[in-house]
Image (tube, rainbow, N blue to C red; front, side):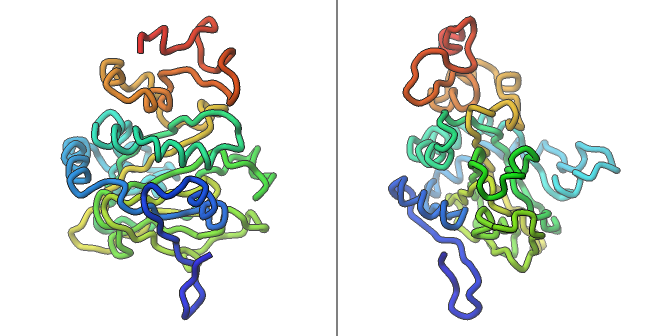
Length: 296
């Protein structure tokens, strides 16, 4: 694991977009996280921001969606806006990030142990406004029936955070504890001192194993909003148990028809098949492929 010289504190390795899948997988297996540089160009980042502007503007703070006594208020963010189903709001993000065969290959590799295809849990735009406190450190993959296996549990979830502005420590860059996906003491209490800020340029992506401990940072700026889109992936084998967003009920079929076939499948508009099998797949209608039923 890369370290700094002075205090031997872990840092997050950085790799170029397009790095061979096996090399990226080596870093993920070792550190549980990696920054992929240059996924989107400056023009593409500007396009995503334009396409997301209205949605961010119209959305209320995430905590306002839950009752005052709900413990999720702090987790969701009292000064954070969350835009659900961002895949249907930004064509540039949909086509160039989710539609990228390179990104798809990375997600497939990280989730390959499950032996099935990749689904999308959520495509969530996030805007951390000035003053937003740091989020509690957590694992996305924290299901009780897997937790008993500790670090031996298979990776069924992974996540990527696309920076739409430069991520600095001051603006609230995501905090990550590299190597926490391999902790022997699985329930050890994480502290902010263990974490490092995933600083990156707009257009870069933080890609991490669902078992890796992380959390949104504290936006200490006076007037800067930390914008990003978080994409959660899960193995299709457990998609309905893990999906946060019910895509087929939220995205109009007319919009789906404009998406790459790869994205349609990850959103649940095409059937899934185990590796090596072409029949008896999952998410079918009378044993027929759902894409045939929908005319996709």
